[in-house]
Length: 101
Image (cartoon, rainbow, N blue to C red):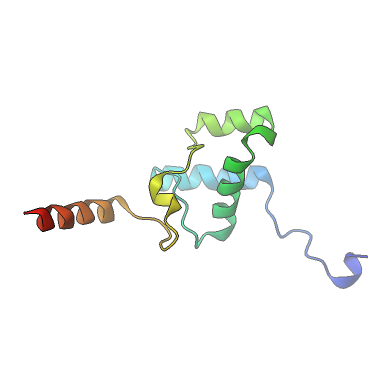
């Protein structure tokens, strides 16, 4: 039935493919603050955090081995931005110290 209407069966990447993408992202960026623009990986990371108790022990172990952040960082909860870079954090701290002076 779904084949008849042209259902896109391969829309979602497998867990393993998303894991590999996450590993590459971590190597490149040294953090797990996935920008919202990377819709697939962003959604995957959010899902892993929400489903901690329902993913397999092997998957949990694999994520733990790469130092996965199970709790979202403060910067990831900002609704207005994709994610803040460390340089943005430093410049905002400088702005705040200028205001206090």
